[in-house]
Length: 366
Image (tube, rainbow, N blue to C red; front, side, top):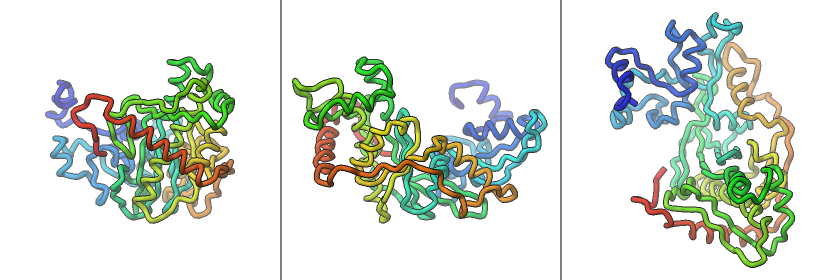
């Protein structure tokens, strides 16, 4: 934008250009905008810009130089939970404190109450996003994961870090079956249709429509369907699409277990796809650990509320005493041997998805 938009170049020359994420824009406007609005962000949002040093929680001069970003246009980095300022008199909410800022996935981590090392949550939507709490330790992944800030619930608190694995295609694979192949009429019926076929005709669907994200980072990968026979029915393809989501989550969890010394004992889940009981049972079966789904679906909103309500001076929440929300628990039902055989075949299918696209570099490092 600085290179291509004349108005932005002019604003920078005149010292009236400010940069920020959506959170920055919202707080700035709510606290007065051009009439003295706050120009801030929090550590979780700042960590997504590739400009913040996650060790110091400050903007990194070297990174800003690499990307040619003037540091004076960047917002002040604050914790995720403190009173930043107050809503101005432009609305009926005037005087209410603004006391919590969190990135989307980090808010879900807090909303799932993953406050302990070794806890992880997975959000299922168009894609899938898994965060694993590593405590106050910054874990540099050597298995294809991203290191990020999980949250910092107060300016005097130590930041909590996390490993993150992003899956590009989750719910999109099911809508693709509906919109492109017309194998289903509604996404909500995918679980029922998948259960119409037996376990014998195993089909594997790797949904790499535009490559694979964590932990493979292969932009040359493309979708493949393996194991088709003359007995294959639509239900097999629908089941394979749901299984593909679960296997990709296991891929990320396997990478997390290799990077960390704390074994995962359960997986906390949220997002639209978790309404599918069949998918959640499948996830438990294929990962070999219980899958816990809160009955209150809006965990991201809950996380934002916890951050705002636990801020010093507000304190309607106390982290140590927050009761977990009621949950549905899915327990693994298949044997370890069956689980391992299925997963080994998935890994075979993954390898067959490589080297399809013509790219300059087949491997993309996170």
